[in-house]
Every structure is written in structure tokens, then in C-alpha cells.
Image 1 (cartoon, rainbow, N blue to C red):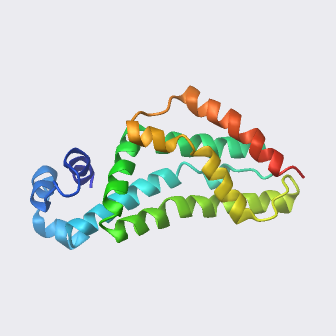
Image 2: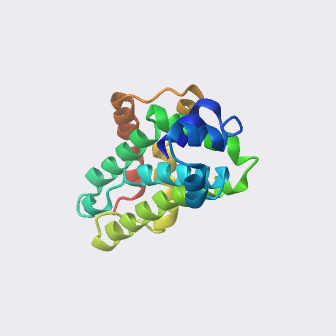
Length: 186
């Protein structure tokens, strides 16, 4: 899969052939087709691997509803850090480019990426509301708001393919978290 990802990033989706993937990976064509069925299937697997990587940025087990500020800071910092790494930015750019032509690419990314993150943040916000540490009238809406606020610098980063520094990520969280917490004050 690493070889396929590298080739997609180097050549784009259209410029990458299954033969080139087979050649670079040292796998047989039969093996590639047995696992992924097609170049499209392999590209979807690359997207799923990428979204799994970004989903791991939210370590649900370490989120403490009695410490919402620290937990939300961790969520935001980790999400923004994972999405704005150089390789992630290049993959996001490729996904956006292919989404118009391939609706399944868009749906795979949305289902396994942003929607999965929203579900995780929403579940955490429900736990905070239940514990009384935050006032969250609608966890799903607030999760979308939180992620939108956190990822606001993402589009310029994707267009420039310039990773955000740890300092820039920290500054974004320093700006976003007080505003979000004000909405959620118990």
C-alpha cells in the first residue's frame, strides 16, 4: 500500500497505473487484484488508511470528561497536527482533486474521515454533558462546530502544501478553545 500511496502522490491518480504499482511494490498483479480488485479499490484503501491514521489522532481512551479543556485541547491539537503534516496535505489535495470525478472517493473519505471524527467528538461531548462539565445542548452540532473551528487553517495549508508548525497549531487552539468553551459553559 505504501508504494501505491507514493505513486498516487507523485503522479496523481490518473497518472498511476496498476502496472507501475505492481512494479514498485514487488507484488504480483494477481496479488494486487486479489486484495483490492482494481486501481480504484486500491485508491479507496489508501484513503481508508489515511483516515484511520487521522482517526487515531483522537485517542478516545485518554479523553476525560472531568477535564474537558485539556481533552478538547488534545483533540484539536492532534487532529490539526495529523491533517497538516506534509504527506497528509498532499493526500488531501489528491482526494479533493479526485472527488469530483469519483463520488466513491469523496464518500469513502467523508465516511471514514470527517464523519468518524465528528462521531468521536460528539460522543465525548455527550459524556461531558452527562458529567456536568460542559453544557452541550446538541452534541452532534457542537462536535461539527468544534472541528470546523479547529480545522479553519486547513484549506490554506492544503493549497500551499505547507505543514503548520507546532506553534501555529498551538496558536489556533489558544484562539479556538476559549470561544468554544464559552458556548459550552455549564
